[in-house]
Image (tube, rainbow, N blue to C red):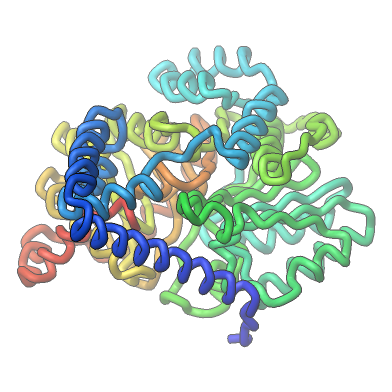
Length: 513
């Protein structure tokens, strides 16, 4: 594998942030100790405040696991936990400068989307059982489209080859937005091509998440690209808002848009492991889709919302619409959407997943690298399985974070008891994020089935209904079952007691992972 030079300044920033967080914890601990020794009445007042905070948490309409996690921290450590919650546990505030910029940008961007009344009427007539999802996403500002061709890639390397081909033919602009960009063989190919297109006068923009890429990019990465005419934005630098731990709110979206006519999304980032250039966790199984046609506009707008929200700018959206109307004849309906902490307690991604599961008549198949789910999601899966629906979930056999995989496995037992079939992908790591049901509709994109994707991260996905591509998605997942080990309840329950104890204990703190 090609040696990667990690950016030294980024490493220093990461260390600095870690030290500042540790310093906050130490200062809070010292404050608590001082209060306990010298200010008994103040200490008691803070404990009462902690009790009030617990009651407030219970009264809020928020994720139950989130509430329980913070109640445990505050109850066990009344003063320390209360101060930590005040610093780190409160939801992202729209009143902060950065949040206001991004919220305003998202509202501004939605105005650039097309009226979908005709397409939604066609969806309602053709698939009356599915219009509930389309109507919900429409109410959140995400239109449904026809006139869009969809191509599915069951492996990252195939997607990248087609993407590079499409970028080579770009005439006006190329937008790239990824959680991770990592220097290596794959990025070398992209960088060479992007520099070439920029030299030809094509507008090239790259946005990546600072935390996701902090140790994967070399010194001078941004300067090098900008010197070649490529515009670069580093989303939410981790050294900002340390006192509120806004480093939790990451941009996990994966979007590529070319000339407003072609768009990509899925699970892949721009790093070598996603193309299987080296076996980071065995064979890397991912998935992505390519859109061509009207629905690409939503991906374009999604990208510009995040870009403008980061820079406090206003793009002219008309400049980035497709120059030519898509003329191909396609079947089905396509509805790209996004989610993020600014949605508050209204999480489109989780609600769409739950609606697909609860409305399933015959089957619902899911691939996800993490299964760190809420009680409501657990109940939805159990209810579907107990009603006779064939519910199957594929997770990795080879994990990337042991503690997250421990929580994933802690959720197996109640699901298995209800009849959910669970598989672990044995050749390596499955990173694909897809749900499909009844041959009629599916979602794929950047969304994991975990607390972070549903509550903390900015995510994006595409709901596909009635498209011929669904048969390709189903075929891929069916083939993946054959390459995976099915988990049996009897064998799963034979695990040592201490393993089950650790898994169940970690599940209490799933919201912090």
